[in-house]
Image (cartoon, rainbow, N blue to C red):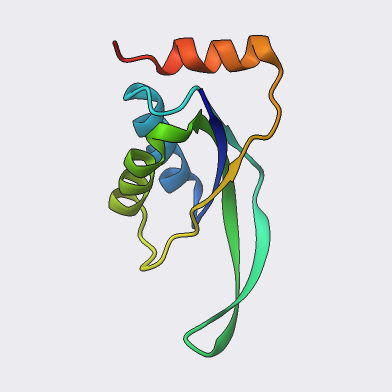
Length: 106
């Protein structure tokens, strides 16, 4: 099994909690860390923007990425939500086994 860490910034805690609940209840992720608010600076449609966002760190199986991406797009208010998957190169074996067990839908 391959594992990914999926990063997503949310505009507020309500959106972050809605996405977190969805992916956990559907066994698309084993764990979601909802981090404290951060200041994001970015260029959107040619304009320098600044906003407060809530980062999510989603731990999931690589094969569930498409479903997680679809869920985030459906539950997120941004036109282009930030969804970045980082393949885990090495994972502590017992943790990887736990992720497999928690996300198993057999």
